[in-house]
Length: 160
Image (cartoon, rainbow, N blue to C red; front, side, top):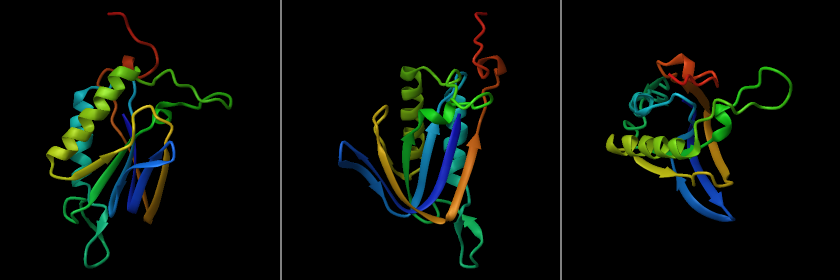
């Protein structure tokens, strides 16, 4: 699973010209699910993110979490994060998780974050979205959690 996380002053998602979700101060999360991802990756990353100290304290040091600042989270599914560009100029999506499983893991991620007491808004799974944000810092991190089954992370799925 790959996540791009951005600290924002505000963020919003529009679909078909209509705003479907928006947040104030918090985190914008782009989530890409890959073959081999399971509930274990979701549980690890959701807990990690809500406790990640990326907001400034009174000394301007990154020492506070989204929970500490009473922030919000906007989670947007992003299929293209599961791409690889090793050869040529066209992205390879062989490692992207099947759509129905990816959607379930995305929804589970959102629920796990909500269980931590953080207000969560979402994009629309599989929709063409316009995402706007005011990045605070800018502060951007990439988080990745691979399945413990490396054969499922290479585009080569074993039949065993």
